[in-house]
Length: 185
Image (tube, rainbow, N blue to C red; front, side, top):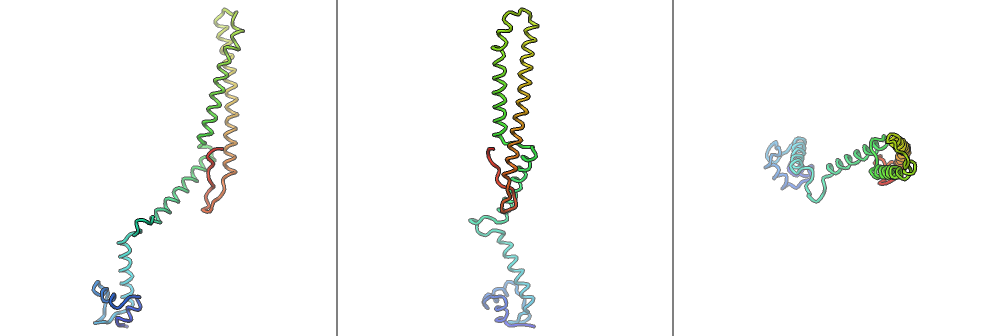
C-alpha cells in the first residue's frame, strides 16, 4: 500500500527533506510522492549498512579498535596460560631459580676442588710414585664429583618446591584465567 512522503519520513525517523534527498540517491518510489513502506525500509537499511562499511570498524582515531584490543587481550591471556602450564609441567623454569641453582652449584664445585691441594698435600709430600699420586688425586676428585652430584639432586628438589609454590599461587581471575606468575619464588 503506497504512503506519502510524511508517512515514510515518520517510519524512517527522517525529515521530509531528507527523504527527498534519499530519493535522489535511489530510494524506491511507486509514483510521484508515493512510497512503498517495505521496500523503502529495506533500501534504507542497506543504505545505512553500506555507509557503515565505508566508515570501517573505527571512525575515531583516538578510540582504540575494540575488536583489536579484545583480540590482543585474548592472545595475551592465552600466552600467559600457556606459560603457566609449561612451568607446571616442568618444561620451563624461572630464570632466577636456574641462576641461583647454578651459582650455588659452581660455588660448591669451586670450594670442593680448591680444598683438594690442602687436603692431599700433607699425604702426598713423601710419595715418589707418580701412579700413587695420580690415584689419590683421582680418588679425591671422584669423591668431590660424587658429592657435587648429590648436591645436584638437592638443588633439583629445591626447584620442585618452587613449582609447588607456583601451583599454590595460581588462582582464577575474573576472566577465568590463572592468577599472576610470581617473579621470584
